[in-house]
Length: 528
Image (cartoon, rainbow, N blue to C red; front, side):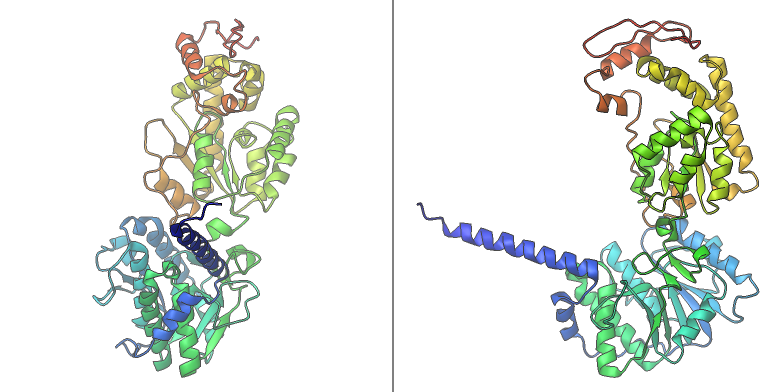
């Protein structure tokens, strides 16, 4: 047997060693436990003295903003306006102020700055670096330099649910120096497991300032490691050091108050949470229904919701059964039952495209899911008619009567389909006039940028909002799901293009089915 070269063994050692390190990191990232990177940073802490700020007076809430200017429109502005609304409530604690701490390169819009009592610019001591690192560095600096005696720090995706949340958090803080929420369900080790950093309550004291100084130092130390991608490991390192060396007093925020996916049964203000972390993503009752009719961009909407991690979608079998019940018997109950599942949050296409035409589905959905939001996709009526005509005549003539029934059209003529299409859209818009905040109307015309900003703001998915990506509309006429599922009988793109070019509103249609080219003539008035 030929002896292997020495480099072979070094390669094996390197590959298996890297795989072992990756697995260790994945476990640490998933479970938030102490690892060698944390130990390395812990051993190097020392000499921190805390920020020069000695603390102000009164109670207050602090937010921080850094990164791209678009962050203000997507996340800061909606959160600021929500806090302003809470402050107008009589239950808001008197004298409690709100401050915004911003990166120096950002310009704060006037409508945002008016929501805060003060806007503070990050000092030059905030280190430069990649975007993710700067965002966390500004966040830590905001805590270090809070102008209040007792502070509630909130990330913008931590949504305060009621005006008394500050008072309740101060009760939790009590005589402790800092109050934190566990990052994981069933967490027992306070000093070797991560805590959540999206809601932090602390008082101004020498010990707390030392904790925050170590928080910043550990964040800088961990910057070059994989644990440095987030700020929770740095908080864990600083917390352990300050508790063991300086006697920091720690209180715990209940998971029923600061509701998070990892620790709480529900993530919703309606479920009794005082602060909800990313409720738009994790609240099972915050469903999104696409109620636009077919060929208006329903597939693009479904892809966009998946991109925003709003999901999952219902099972295909459940969708088929609900569609059949609604179309054949005007029975909306199977659709409501399907939508009620906690396992599904995103809904588009059938049966939801019949919400305003069959079985009173729209009214039933709005009543059954009061926190749900609705998206009406639509196109220019003539462009929609051309797309629909081509799709049915060249690809799915067997769906002709079924499609007309979905829309509520009495026959397959251009005049009747356009009438039914316009009436459908009008019914949806008129229904939501008393509650316009629950409806978003999107015109998804081809060759236009996808309206990400409007969709993200509507579903409150600001942090994950793309800027230039376009969702994959896999159900377009020339590249569709039927061809993908049935390539042996479906016409190809060239055949479909020829078919579409040969169509007029009154002509018969030439159908091409794979290798068997069979002329099937049917009237566009509805007779197959």
